[in-house]
Image (cartoon, rainbow, N blue to C red; front, side, top):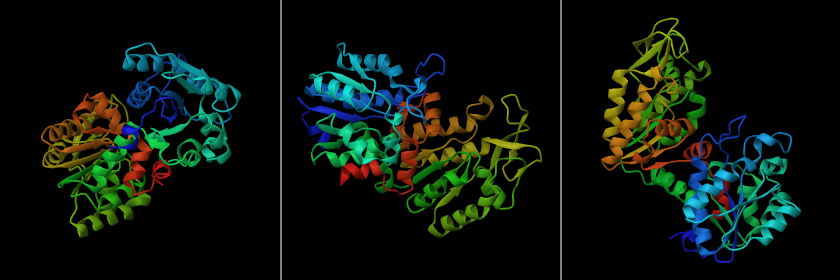
Length: 404
């Protein structure tokens, strides 16, 4: 059992680092996607049910010059109150502090009673947060008696509230929340306990964004499926004609090096045999199917083709462990979403047949949500950049700070 699950929070003030960096409408400040908020509710619920109180701290957006209206966490108070009240089956008021440190934050947190919740203003209104300033972290630490990090989405940042603050709490008074525990466990399952065949599905625009993750997976995976814009860098590297498809010319040698390493290690790299090509990057472009290494001049690959879909599906269906990071094409446009949708369906089917599947990275998570498959895979990660760095083999500061 984990420390969090067995810990009794009665009469404790739990200072929780959450990731409430949610998209807000520019005019109305309505929340576009509340998944990150919902993901934190079980941790909050456990503490309140134990008879503890909760102080929530988060960042929102990228404020550059201190406080600004559009990045204020006050916009999420009402919705947060509804989520917590629903979970607790009783009305729970969420109080708000107009600052994350200072007199108001100290007074309001000190006055919190068992079962009460306080949300602090945006941490990034202070430059000290991103700088990992120890004095700022110490001021935050004075607000709670126990520290809980439940923000996997920021675990790769050595910020004051994620990595530095833990030193101000003694062992046994700092821990991961349920969301963070779940993320780390799911990632560990894939990285170090993967049942073979292990297929990694890597998509997205650029090889440069995914080099480290591919290299780390070459040590672990049996199959790597490569789709999205990055596939055309591999095609061109092997002498293929890719028209005006996306390509990183400065990464052609890297692509060949990856293919060579994979062959040496016996890892199968699966590139899309054919593509849906378009004469323009637009929803109403003319389209046709072409071999991925013979795309006519003036045309570009914007999705994997029907043969590639079949090929990729077969690889996924015989897998026991699946990691999916990145879409197969421009799935935001209906004409170019079939490849990504096919992957989603295949991953869901493989999961139903007993495979362990982890979907991580903003676009793949958006895709499984859009196509309605988020409940049909084993785990959907809330941390895009953090999950990537974890799979690159890096030590995440937010995890190390608690584990020490």
